Image: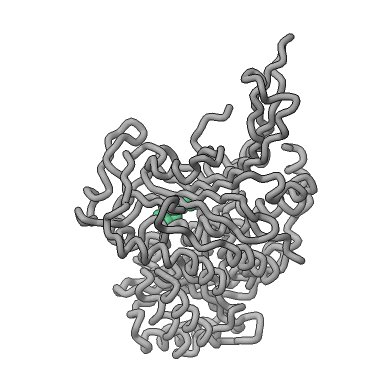
Length: 521
Ligand code: BG6
């Protein structure tokens, strides 16, 4: 498996990626430049792209924020952020290159005039360097101001700059993309009025993670998986995205969001779509996104009440994480004592299509769980119990394909093997491939890949408007139901565990159990 995946990696060189395209001169404009995401992810990603010479020679960064700041203070902020968060050390030559083109622009998000003065700055830079530039607007503010920003980009003419040419403006929109179907739809309407879809990049940083990208390669560049990737051979699929951290100082945002909006609607549903989709007819962005939409469209509405509800929500109680005591969610900073926000959500889903009819997809995500782990587990059907199976020594375990997105990115296939010795005894063994052991640890961060793709107009790893709405279409009724129930039905789990017992019931009687976190070695 190790050699095989290595071969694939070599053969999928970058023929279809942004690496071999020539990016035109660019100005990246970040709305929310003083925010946490800029410091932790965006500035380091831009720095590392620059270090790898992947940015155009003429590249500027304008930080747009509400409080006035001098260019020098902005440069300082960025430098500090890089020191704290860049995956590679900052050295003089890259920093000097970047620093001279860092500019700060103070303005309100709902003030058209601030966008007009921004446009003046952009035109001035164009005159200075004597060529047309493309603008990449990165909307990284709290979601409440997405709309005014997008409207003002339209109203000021910034959205239309050089449209139809290679220097057309582009816009990256951070998550959360709406808070339900209705608001996502309204956001899409504004976007459609102001931009062409080809200019729009709705980001989900999970799509930029190495293992997520390689999922497509694994599925469609290997002939051994495709024939068994269906209801005849797969008995269940599980997707776990667990975190050991709590809400930290993000209580204000999180309490209005919760696990379903924060993680499931975007990251987890994207993993599901990539796992379940049909082979696209080509690698172009629209073919891939068409297939993802079809998979999401096939999802059956969830049963919320009755004998066997298909969704569980819970909130963390106090507990022990990594040996240290931790607070309950409702005792965290900024969280009301009567909060009904879920910090954990799990569900059992079915796709009503030819490939997956009857195969449960179990999804779960939560904070303050036993460990940070993102995994897709494909569990295969057991072989007929004719030769092995009756005798407990000959216990046949199901074959599992575990795709580990983080940490310790890799792929493990569990097979049954005979243990050495005169007796016939079976034991699951694993064929394991680890990214780090095979390729070394210096892989780019998700945001590097995604920003580079957006600069080059490649939307493959971004969410299309209809995809976002399809995912909300499934989950909005769940949110409405929960909000009608208040705290009723909100389960609890001790921090540092794998979540509430009620989540195990989702699997009850199916012969399945949650796999991530179990020791299968
Ligand atoms: C973000 C969520 O989208 O993803 C956070 O808002 C979460 O709550 C984070 O912690 C997890 O991302 P990663 O890359 O650390 O798995």
